[in-house]
Image (cartoon, rainbow, N blue to C red):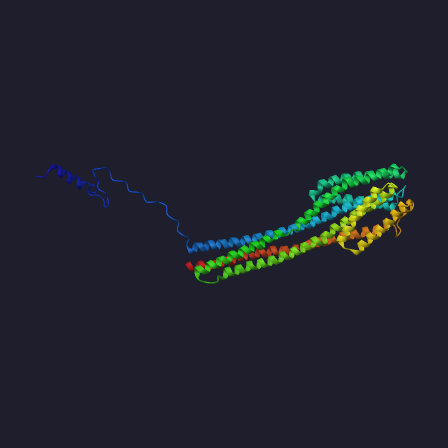
Amino acid sequence: MSHPTATAAATDAAQHPAAAVPAPGALAPTASGPAPTPALAPTTRARPPLSTPQRLQLLSSGVVVLGVLLALVGVVTFALLAVGLDRARADTEQLVRVQSIQTDLLRADATATNAFLVGGLEPAAQRAAYDQAMSSSSARVAEAAQAQPADAAALAVLNRQILDYDAAIEQARANNRQGFPVGAQYLRLASAQLRSSALPVLDELVAANAERADRRMGVGGGYVFPVLCLLAVVGLVLAQLWLARRFHRRVNPGLLAATLVVLLALVGSLIGMAGLSTQVRDTRTGSFADVNAAARARIWANNAKANESLTLIARGSGQAFDRAWTESGQVVTAELRVLGDPALTEAWSRYGDVHGAIRRQDDAGQWDRAVRQATGTAPDSANASFGALDDGLARAVQEAGATTNARLDGERPGLVVAALLSLLAGLAAALLGRRGIAARLREYR
């Protein structure tokens, strides 16, 4: 007879076979407690290294980005150089314009003081010359304010000072025509006001425009493109070396062609920048320097001429004006030395001789004779010799300014061509480099 407990166990095992037979590898329960929990396996995996096709695709993208960057930098670099030189030309024109205002004012003052020596009704020719100089200065003030907004505020102040000076001169004339001695005092005050108020404003404008023009003639930023070309050549050479080791081939035609294109761009840009730097440097030290020298010589020569008349008007008490003539003459001599024009130097020497004769006559008590030589129109008069000098300096300013503008304008076409060539070179390098790497990628397909 079977045992009832054994029979029940057999029946339960038959109904639940999975519970009856332990799973393979499972630990049997022990009397001491439940089975320990097995440790979990780590879920993170190390990233597999890039395959060769993936590396080739990255290299291809890098070459394309490098070529496009080269094209963009070249276009921007040479375009900025062209814009900078164009602005330098505009600043040079503004510089000449402001210097012309300064010259016109001093020329007007020299004419007014010289005509004042005649007494009574001034000569019609000198009155016309004064009116023309004042009209020219006013017109140039308006033109300069429109051409350079940065100078507008200072020019507005200058315009008010010009009007005040003109009003003071008219008051001096009215008294002089009536024979009132106070007219001479009004004239001296007007000249002093011109030199203490108006001319310092013009000096600041001249300095600002000269500094702007000189700064914008700088071409150092143009060397950014050659530097980038050099870095691109190094990068393309390294890419070729990697491909040569990976594929056991010495030359990749596409990358080699891209390298040669960039190398040509490097050499061409270096030659072009060297030539541009030389041209701009020659302009700075040549015609641009002549513009400043001729304009300053003319300004200070007219200042000297005005002080010559003011010395005679003072009648024995014009030592301060005579010293001012000497100081102005020293500036003129120095600027003429910069110009190196023998004809202008000779014209200044002739006027200096006439001025010396006038001073000797005045010091000897021959005031009337000195006034006749200072106000006359004979070949040996101060007006005749000074007129030749002033005309020569005016031509020198005009010619030097025109030469400067022509040289700066002449660089623009070359910079436009350089921008286009750099664009083509960068795009060609990108295309050729991509095609060279694509040939290696096709070997995996």
